[in-house]
Image (cartoon, rainbow over all chains, first blue to last red; front, side, top):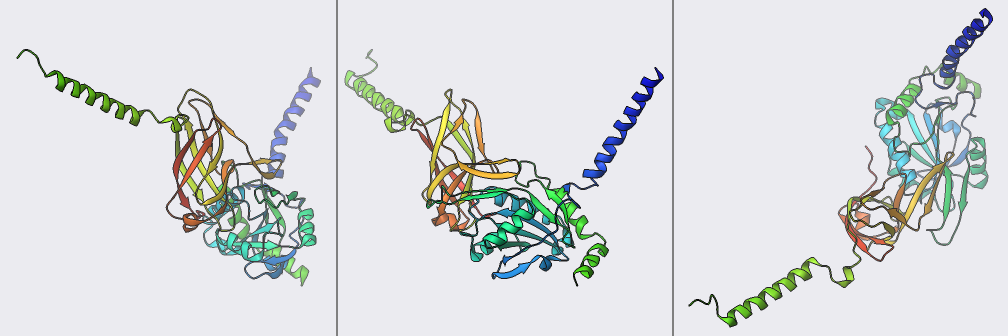
Length: 216
Length: 160
Protein backbone atom coordinates (compact mmCIF):
# COMPACT_ATOMS: atom_id res chain seq x y z
CA UNK A 1 0.00 0.00 0.00
CA UNK A 2 2.62 2.50 1.04
CA UNK A 3 4.95 1.09 -1.61
CA UNK A 4 2.29 1.71 -4.27
CA UNK A 5 1.74 5.21 -2.98
CA UNK A 6 5.43 5.91 -3.06
CA UNK A 7 5.62 4.63 -6.55
CA UNK A 8 2.69 6.79 -7.53
CA UNK A 9 4.27 9.80 -5.88
CA UNK A 10 7.53 9.09 -7.60
CA UNK A 11 5.73 8.79 -10.94
CA UNK A 12 3.93 12.04 -10.18
CA UNK A 13 7.21 13.77 -9.48
CA UNK A 14 8.69 12.34 -12.65
CA UNK A 15 5.66 13.48 -14.65
CA UNK A 16 5.94 16.94 -13.13
CA UNK A 17 9.64 17.12 -13.84
CA UNK A 18 9.43 15.92 -17.45
CA UNK A 19 7.51 18.83 -18.95
CA UNK A 20 9.87 21.22 -17.18
CA UNK A 21 13.01 19.64 -18.52
CA UNK A 22 11.42 19.23 -21.94
CA UNK A 23 10.42 22.87 -21.90
CA UNK A 24 13.93 23.87 -20.98
CA UNK A 25 15.49 21.65 -23.61
CA UNK A 26 13.47 22.64 -26.64
CA UNK A 27 11.90 25.94 -25.72
CA UNK A 28 14.01 28.45 -23.85
CA UNK A 29 11.40 31.02 -24.79
CA UNK A 30 12.23 30.79 -28.49
CA UNK A 31 9.43 30.69 -31.03
CA UNK A 32 11.52 28.64 -33.43
CA UNK A 33 13.41 25.41 -32.73
CA UNK A 34 16.48 25.86 -30.55
CA UNK A 35 19.42 24.00 -32.09
CA UNK A 36 22.14 25.64 -30.00
CA UNK A 37 25.02 23.22 -29.56
CA UNK A 38 23.51 20.55 -31.79
CA UNK A 39 24.08 22.01 -35.27
CA UNK A 40 27.43 23.10 -36.72
CA UNK A 41 28.47 26.71 -37.06
CA UNK A 42 28.20 28.58 -40.35
CA UNK A 43 31.05 27.66 -42.71
CA UNK A 44 31.11 28.16 -46.48
CA UNK A 45 32.81 29.78 -49.45
CA UNK A 46 30.68 30.91 -52.41
CA UNK A 47 30.06 33.65 -54.93
CA UNK A 48 27.60 36.27 -53.72
CA UNK A 49 25.27 38.86 -55.18
CA UNK A 50 25.41 41.56 -56.37
CA UNK A 51 28.72 41.15 -58.24
CA UNK A 52 29.81 37.56 -57.80
CA UNK A 53 32.48 38.38 -55.27
CA UNK A 54 33.70 35.43 -53.21
CA UNK A 55 32.43 35.49 -49.65
CA UNK A 56 32.85 33.15 -46.74
CA UNK A 57 31.34 32.79 -43.29
CA UNK A 58 33.47 35.50 -41.70
CA UNK A 59 31.78 38.10 -43.92
CA UNK A 60 28.73 37.50 -41.71
CA UNK A 61 30.35 37.79 -38.29
CA UNK A 62 28.35 40.39 -36.41
CA UNK A 63 25.15 39.63 -38.32
CA UNK A 64 22.28 37.39 -37.38
CA UNK A 65 22.20 35.25 -40.49
CA UNK A 66 19.47 33.08 -41.97
CA UNK A 67 20.44 30.31 -44.37
CA UNK A 68 17.94 28.91 -46.88
CA UNK A 69 18.25 26.67 -49.93
CA UNK A 70 16.14 27.24 -53.01
CA UNK A 71 16.24 28.08 -56.72
CA UNK A 72 14.96 30.89 -58.90
CA UNK A 73 12.68 28.76 -61.11
CA UNK A 74 10.65 28.31 -57.93
CA UNK A 75 7.56 30.54 -58.36
CA UNK A 76 5.61 29.45 -55.30
CA UNK A 77 7.32 28.11 -52.18
CA UNK A 78 10.55 30.15 -52.36
CA UNK A 79 8.82 33.53 -52.88
CA UNK A 80 6.28 32.62 -50.19
CA UNK A 81 9.11 31.80 -47.77
CA UNK A 82 10.99 34.98 -48.53
CA UNK A 83 7.87 37.17 -48.49
CA UNK A 84 7.11 35.89 -45.01
CA UNK A 85 10.71 36.44 -43.92
CA UNK A 86 10.51 39.97 -45.36
CA UNK A 87 7.32 40.50 -43.37
CA UNK A 88 9.17 39.35 -40.23
CA UNK A 89 12.13 41.62 -41.02
CA UNK A 90 9.72 44.55 -41.33
CA UNK A 91 8.81 43.91 -37.70
CA UNK A 92 12.36 43.91 -36.35
CA UNK A 93 12.78 47.69 -36.24
CA UNK A 94 16.36 48.91 -36.01
CA UNK A 95 17.66 45.35 -35.61
CA UNK A 96 17.09 44.78 -39.34
CA UNK A 97 20.43 46.35 -40.24
CA UNK A 98 22.17 43.49 -38.41
CA UNK A 99 20.23 40.70 -40.11
CA UNK A 100 21.00 38.96 -43.40
CA UNK A 101 19.19 36.24 -45.33
CA UNK A 102 21.36 33.96 -47.46
CA UNK A 103 19.55 32.33 -50.37
CA UNK A 104 21.77 29.48 -51.56
CA UNK A 105 20.79 28.15 -54.96
CA UNK A 106 20.73 24.37 -55.30
CA UNK A 107 20.45 24.93 -59.07
CA UNK A 108 23.69 26.83 -59.81
CA UNK A 109 23.63 25.67 -63.43
CA UNK A 110 20.69 27.94 -64.24
CA UNK A 111 20.99 30.43 -61.40
CA UNK A 112 23.72 32.80 -62.45
CA UNK A 113 24.73 35.71 -60.25
CA UNK A 114 22.76 38.30 -62.33
CA UNK A 115 19.59 36.18 -62.10
CA UNK A 116 20.12 35.59 -58.38
CA UNK A 117 20.68 39.31 -57.87
CA UNK A 118 17.39 40.18 -59.58
CA UNK A 119 15.54 37.43 -57.70
CA UNK A 120 16.71 38.19 -54.16
CA UNK A 121 16.43 41.92 -54.90
CA UNK A 122 12.64 41.45 -55.11
CA UNK A 123 12.51 40.76 -51.39
CA UNK A 124 14.73 43.42 -49.83
CA UNK A 125 18.28 44.60 -49.27
CA UNK A 126 18.90 42.04 -46.52
CA UNK A 127 18.57 39.19 -49.02
CA UNK A 128 21.81 37.85 -50.51
CA UNK A 129 22.07 35.23 -53.25
CA UNK A 130 24.86 32.66 -53.01
CA UNK A 131 26.11 30.46 -55.80
CA UNK A 132 28.71 27.78 -55.21
CA UNK A 133 30.42 25.32 -57.48
CA UNK A 134 29.47 21.66 -57.07
CA UNK A 135 32.02 21.08 -54.28
CA UNK A 136 31.17 24.25 -52.40
CA UNK A 137 27.47 23.47 -52.52
CA UNK A 138 28.04 19.85 -51.47
CA UNK A 139 30.15 20.94 -48.49
CA UNK A 140 27.50 23.35 -47.22
CA UNK A 141 24.51 21.07 -47.76
CA UNK A 142 26.28 18.10 -46.16
CA UNK A 143 27.33 20.22 -43.20
CA UNK A 144 23.68 20.99 -42.45
CA UNK A 145 22.31 17.68 -43.78
CA UNK A 146 20.20 19.55 -46.29
CA UNK A 147 18.87 17.20 -48.91
CA UNK A 148 18.11 18.41 -52.39
CA UNK A 149 17.86 16.97 -55.85
CA UNK A 150 17.98 18.48 -59.30
CA UNK A 151 16.64 16.52 -62.25
CA UNK A 152 17.53 18.50 -65.37
CA UNK A 153 15.38 18.43 -68.49
CA UNK A 154 15.53 20.39 -71.73
CA UNK A 155 11.90 21.27 -71.01
CA UNK A 156 11.95 23.80 -68.15
CA UNK A 157 8.48 22.60 -67.18
CA UNK A 158 9.89 19.15 -66.44
CA UNK A 159 13.15 20.28 -64.84
CA UNK A 160 12.54 19.12 -61.30
CA UNK A 161 14.15 20.54 -58.18
CA UNK A 162 13.46 19.33 -54.66
CA UNK A 163 14.94 21.26 -51.77
CA UNK A 164 14.89 21.51 -48.00
CA UNK A 165 12.34 23.98 -46.70
CA UNK A 166 13.89 24.89 -43.34
CA UNK A 167 15.73 28.09 -42.51
CA UNK A 168 18.80 27.89 -40.25
CA UNK A 169 19.49 30.91 -38.06
CA UNK A 170 22.99 31.77 -36.82
CA UNK A 171 23.93 34.27 -34.15
CA UNK A 172 26.45 37.08 -34.56
CA UNK A 173 29.25 34.68 -33.72
CA UNK A 174 28.12 32.28 -36.51
CA UNK A 175 26.82 29.66 -34.06
CA UNK A 176 23.74 27.75 -35.22
CA UNK A 177 20.94 28.76 -32.88
CA UNK A 178 17.53 28.20 -34.41
CA UNK A 179 15.75 26.17 -37.04
CA UNK A 180 12.67 27.71 -38.62
CA UNK A 181 10.82 24.60 -39.89
CA UNK A 182 9.09 26.34 -42.79
CA UNK A 183 7.89 29.79 -43.62
CA UNK A 184 5.87 28.35 -46.53
CA UNK A 185 2.98 27.04 -44.45
CA UNK A 186 -0.56 28.37 -44.26
CA UNK A 187 0.16 29.71 -40.79
CA UNK A 188 3.73 31.03 -40.67
CA UNK A 189 4.75 32.44 -37.29
CA UNK A 190 5.97 35.79 -38.62
CA UNK A 191 5.79 37.57 -35.26
CA UNK A 192 7.65 34.69 -33.64
CA UNK A 193 10.47 34.83 -36.18
CA UNK A 194 10.69 38.62 -35.80
CA UNK A 195 10.93 38.29 -32.00
CA UNK A 196 13.59 35.57 -32.26
CA UNK A 197 15.68 37.63 -34.69
CA UNK A 198 15.52 40.73 -32.50
CA UNK A 199 16.46 38.66 -29.47
CA UNK A 200 19.50 37.26 -31.27
CA UNK A 201 20.56 40.72 -32.46
CA UNK A 202 20.26 42.03 -28.90
CA UNK A 203 22.22 39.22 -27.26
CA UNK A 204 25.17 40.43 -25.23
CA UNK A 205 28.05 40.49 -27.67
CA UNK A 206 30.53 38.84 -25.29
CA UNK A 207 30.05 35.46 -26.93
CA UNK A 208 30.81 36.64 -30.44
CA UNK A 209 33.60 38.92 -29.32
CA UNK A 210 35.00 35.83 -27.68
CA UNK A 211 34.57 34.00 -30.96
CA UNK A 212 36.24 36.87 -32.83
CA UNK A 213 39.19 36.68 -30.45
CA UNK A 214 39.29 33.00 -31.17
CA UNK A 215 39.77 33.44 -34.92
CA UNK A 216 42.18 36.43 -34.81
CA UNK B 1 -65.79 46.57 -84.12
CA UNK B 2 -65.87 43.59 -81.81
CA UNK B 3 -62.71 42.14 -83.23
CA UNK B 4 -59.87 43.43 -81.09
CA UNK B 5 -57.38 43.39 -83.89
CA UNK B 6 -56.93 42.89 -87.53
CA UNK B 7 -55.91 39.30 -88.38
CA UNK B 8 -52.87 40.51 -90.29
CA UNK B 9 -51.74 42.69 -87.39
CA UNK B 10 -52.25 39.76 -85.04
CA UNK B 11 -50.09 37.56 -87.26
CA UNK B 12 -47.39 40.21 -87.42
CA UNK B 13 -47.50 40.57 -83.68
CA UNK B 14 -47.19 36.81 -83.24
CA UNK B 15 -44.32 36.64 -85.66
CA UNK B 16 -42.70 39.50 -83.83
CA UNK B 17 -43.15 37.73 -80.53
CA UNK B 18 -41.72 34.55 -81.95
CA UNK B 19 -38.69 36.46 -83.24
CA UNK B 20 -38.21 38.15 -79.86
CA UNK B 21 -38.57 34.80 -78.15
CA UNK B 22 -35.96 33.37 -80.47
CA UNK B 23 -33.61 36.27 -79.73
CA UNK B 24 -34.17 35.85 -76.00
CA UNK B 25 -33.61 32.13 -76.33
CA UNK B 26 -30.35 32.78 -78.20
CA UNK B 27 -29.20 35.23 -75.58
CA UNK B 28 -30.10 33.03 -72.63
CA UNK B 29 -29.32 29.56 -73.88
CA UNK B 30 -25.69 29.37 -74.92
CA UNK B 31 -24.98 28.32 -78.50
CA UNK B 32 -23.67 24.85 -79.14
CA UNK B 33 -20.04 25.87 -78.70
CA UNK B 34 -20.77 26.94 -75.14
CA UNK B 35 -22.86 23.92 -74.31
CA UNK B 36 -20.18 22.49 -72.01
CA UNK B 37 -19.56 25.81 -70.27
CA UNK B 38 -19.68 24.87 -66.62
CA UNK B 39 -21.57 26.65 -63.90
CA UNK B 40 -18.55 27.95 -62.05
CA UNK B 41 -17.30 31.16 -60.46
CA UNK B 42 -13.66 32.23 -60.43
CA UNK B 43 -12.74 34.74 -57.75
CA UNK B 44 -9.59 36.33 -56.36
CA UNK B 45 -7.57 35.61 -59.50
CA UNK B 46 -4.03 37.00 -59.45
CA UNK B 47 -0.75 36.42 -61.20
CA UNK B 48 2.40 36.94 -59.18
CA UNK B 49 5.21 37.80 -61.54
CA UNK B 50 8.82 37.61 -60.38
CA UNK B 51 11.26 38.00 -63.29
CA UNK B 52 10.85 37.92 -67.09
CA UNK B 53 12.99 34.80 -67.43
CA UNK B 54 11.46 32.94 -64.50
CA UNK B 55 8.04 31.32 -64.01
CA UNK B 56 5.15 33.32 -62.56
CA UNK B 57 2.45 31.84 -60.33
CA UNK B 58 -1.32 32.14 -60.63
CA UNK B 59 -3.71 31.92 -57.71
CA UNK B 60 -7.53 31.89 -57.56
CA UNK B 61 -10.59 30.29 -56.03
CA UNK B 62 -12.87 28.19 -58.21
CA UNK B 63 -16.40 27.44 -57.12
CA UNK B 64 -18.47 24.73 -58.77
CA UNK B 65 -22.06 25.96 -58.58
CA UNK B 66 -23.46 23.03 -60.51
CA UNK B 67 -24.70 19.61 -59.52
CA UNK B 68 -22.05 17.62 -61.35
CA UNK B 69 -18.45 17.06 -60.39
CA UNK B 70 -15.88 18.91 -62.49
CA UNK B 71 -12.23 18.28 -63.17
CA UNK B 72 -9.98 21.24 -63.82
CA UNK B 73 -7.56 19.93 -66.39
CA UNK B 74 -5.59 22.87 -67.74
CA UNK B 75 -5.17 26.58 -68.13
CA UNK B 76 -4.00 29.08 -70.71
CA UNK B 77 -3.24 32.77 -70.91
CA UNK B 78 -2.13 34.95 -73.83
CA UNK B 79 1.08 36.11 -72.11
CA UNK B 80 2.27 32.74 -70.82
CA UNK B 81 4.12 30.42 -73.14
CA UNK B 82 2.44 27.66 -71.19
CA UNK B 83 0.30 27.68 -68.08
CA UNK B 84 0.30 24.48 -66.08
CA UNK B 85 -1.42 23.15 -63.00
CA UNK B 86 1.20 22.69 -60.33
CA UNK B 87 1.24 21.65 -56.73
CA UNK B 88 3.80 22.41 -54.05
CA UNK B 89 4.01 19.83 -51.33
CA UNK B 90 6.17 19.54 -48.28
CA UNK B 91 7.08 16.25 -46.70
CA UNK B 92 9.80 15.58 -44.16
CA UNK B 93 11.18 19.09 -44.49
CA UNK B 94 11.51 18.76 -48.26
CA UNK B 95 9.72 21.10 -50.63
CA UNK B 96 8.69 19.63 -53.94
CA UNK B 97 6.79 21.05 -56.89
CA UNK B 98 5.10 18.84 -59.44
CA UNK B 99 2.76 19.13 -62.38
CA UNK B 100 -0.75 17.80 -61.81
CA UNK B 101 -3.03 16.46 -64.56
CA UNK B 102 -6.31 17.51 -63.07
CA UNK B 103 -7.89 18.81 -59.91
CA UNK B 104 -11.39 17.65 -58.95
CA UNK B 105 -13.98 20.26 -58.02
CA UNK B 106 -16.95 18.66 -56.26
CA UNK B 107 -20.49 19.87 -56.99
CA UNK B 108 -21.34 22.89 -54.84
CA UNK B 109 -17.76 22.84 -53.63
CA UNK B 110 -14.71 24.93 -54.30
CA UNK B 111 -10.96 24.61 -54.63
CA UNK B 112 -8.35 27.18 -53.80
CA UNK B 113 -5.09 27.73 -55.62
CA UNK B 114 -3.00 29.54 -53.02
CA UNK B 115 0.68 30.00 -52.14
CA UNK B 116 2.31 26.83 -50.85
CA UNK B 117 -0.23 24.52 -52.49
CA UNK B 118 -1.90 24.38 -55.89
CA UNK B 119 -0.81 27.12 -58.26
CA UNK B 120 -0.75 27.86 -61.97
CA UNK B 121 2.78 27.96 -63.29
CA UNK B 122 3.26 30.44 -66.12
CA UNK B 123 6.37 29.62 -68.10
CA UNK B 124 8.10 32.58 -69.72
CA UNK B 125 5.78 35.42 -68.78
CA UNK B 126 5.68 38.15 -71.43
CA UNK B 127 3.66 41.21 -72.46
CA UNK B 128 1.53 42.96 -69.88
CA UNK B 129 2.59 40.46 -67.21
CA UNK B 130 6.01 42.09 -67.07
CA UNK B 131 4.47 45.48 -66.21
CA UNK B 132 3.21 44.10 -62.87
CA UNK B 133 -0.04 46.02 -63.54
CA UNK B 134 -3.44 45.43 -65.10
CA UNK B 135 -5.12 42.09 -65.63
CA UNK B 136 -4.43 38.94 -67.58
CA UNK B 137 -7.31 36.95 -69.08
CA UNK B 138 -6.77 33.43 -67.81
CA UNK B 139 -8.83 30.58 -69.21
CA UNK B 140 -9.40 27.49 -67.12
CA UNK B 141 -10.12 24.29 -69.03
CA UNK B 142 -12.16 21.37 -67.80
CA UNK B 143 -11.88 17.69 -68.58
CA UNK B 144 -15.35 17.64 -70.17
CA UNK B 145 -14.27 20.25 -72.74
CA UNK B 146 -15.77 23.29 -71.08
CA UNK B 147 -13.82 26.34 -70.10
CA UNK B 148 -14.16 29.60 -68.26
CA UNK B 149 -12.19 32.84 -68.50
CA UNK B 150 -11.54 35.31 -65.74
CA UNK B 151 -9.38 38.40 -65.26
CA UNK B 152 -6.36 37.81 -63.02
CA UNK B 153 -4.84 40.88 -61.34
CA UNK B 154 -1.16 41.14 -62.22
CA UNK B 155 1.18 41.85 -59.34
CA UNK B 156 4.83 41.71 -58.42
CA UNK B 157 6.21 40.30 -55.21
CA UNK B 158 4.39 41.96 -52.37
CA UNK B 159 6.66 42.78 -49.46
CA UNK B 160 6.72 45.56 -46.88
